[in-house]
Every structure is written in C-alpha cells, then in structure tokens.
Image 1 (cartoon, rainbow, N blue to C red):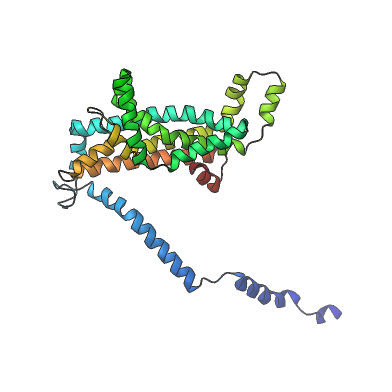
Image 2 (cartoon, rainbow, N blue to C red; image 1 turned 120 degrees about the vertical axis):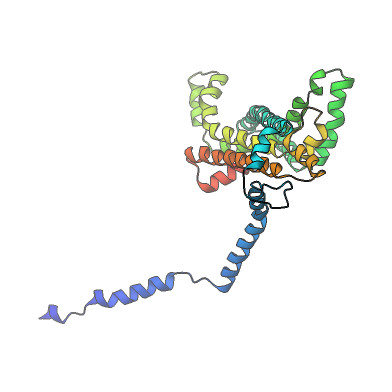
Length: 304
C-alpha cells in the first residue's frame, strides 16, 4: 500500500530536465547574426576576385574582360605559347631550388635556436624578424646592385645567371619562415630521446640524423612546401633581379598587362592557384598525419 502512494518522481523530473536542457542552449542574438552575415560578406569580398579569374579562364574571347563564351581555348593557348611555358617553367624551377635551399638552411637554423639556447638566439631571431618585416621593395633595391657587383665587378659569373639570382632573392624570406616553423615544432618536443642517444655515446651527427630530424620532419616538409608557394608568388623582387631569358610567371603577367590581359593569363593563373592550394593542402595533411590538431597546424603554418 505504501508503494502505491509514492509519487512518480521520474515523470515529474522529466519536464524539469527538458526545461533545463532547453534553457542551457545559447540563444543567438541579433548581434551574433549580424556578425555572421558581416563575416560572410568579408569572405565573399576577399575571394570573389579569385572566383572571377577562375571563371574567366574558360572565356573564349580575345580579351579577359569581355566574356564571349565557355570553352577551353585559353588552356590550349597556354600550352602552345612558348613564352608562357618558359615563364611557368622558370617559376617552378626557381621555386623548387629555393625551397630546397631554404629548407636546408632554415632547418639547421631552427634546430640551433631550439637546442642551443643563449644570448645569440635573441639576436638571430631579431635578424629573422627584420627579414620578414622589411618591405619587398627594399630587399629588391638592395639586392640588385649587390648581385650586379658580384656578377660583374667581382667577376663571379654565377651571379649573372637568372635562376641563381631568383633563388637568392626568393630564399631570403623563405629561410626565415622555415626557421620559425622548425623552431616552433622542436621547442614543444622533449629532449629525452636526444639525451638518451647522447648517453649511449652516439655522435652528434647520427643523433641529429636518426633522432632529431625524424622528430621535426613534418615541420621540415611543411616549411619546404610553404617556401615553394612563397616563391611562386614573389613578384617585386623577381621584377628587379630577373635577367633576360629567365622571366618568372608573375613578372610575365605584369608585362602582359600593358598589352591587355588575355584569357590564357587567367588559365595559367588558375593552374598556379591549384598548384599552390595543393601544396598547402599537402602541408596540412603532413602535419595532420603527425598528430597535430587544427589549431597546431594553423600555428605551425603561420610560423608561430
């Protein structure tokens, strides 16, 4: 009899629980909706030109700004023009060489800053920051007479080569970027494995090759790919130091503006954009495979 008179607490608690859950859900205010719309408009404003250039790369007209119809004529023209092929090949070759060079130097610099602390690290980091914040036009103006002096006055003919000049100019900024990425990766890793290798009387070089380098390999690959994409986008320095016969793609586009942009320019720009996005996606994939979170990937790619 007593059991029958007990109240049904489960049924009574259900509405209260449901009310609590509903009340716990954050309600979107008018300000939140306004900020979401504003953010969407900002992203649309930033990426709309890229979408336009992709669409107009399929234009069959003679000029880029005059839409005539949909087709693949621009891509066929891109493949048939030697000047365009040469410019793209110069950019890709320069990007690969400068990425290798910047990755090698930047990796050594990043490892040294992370594993050999001292007063020199602050000064060296200041120099790297100075390289990254210096306007490109200043770097270009400084590099041009220096390379001319080395190539002509000093008699070092190697500095008269267009690819060598471009690699030097592109590597200055890329070395700093790779150094930041490798250092930020290595600072967050424990030194126990390296210390254990030293305790087992392993020489420094095998320790670096078999222990340290595998630990920072994701950052090394990410830095190399970023260095490649930065080289593809380098315009100001390239315009100053390039020589005849080694005109990179950005400089070719600038010269083509004088005679009017044609759809094949948009076609090559679309291909280069896809190449850059593919390199960045590969960077994110490499870091994701190494166990980094989305926040860590963004931080590493930003050199933070």
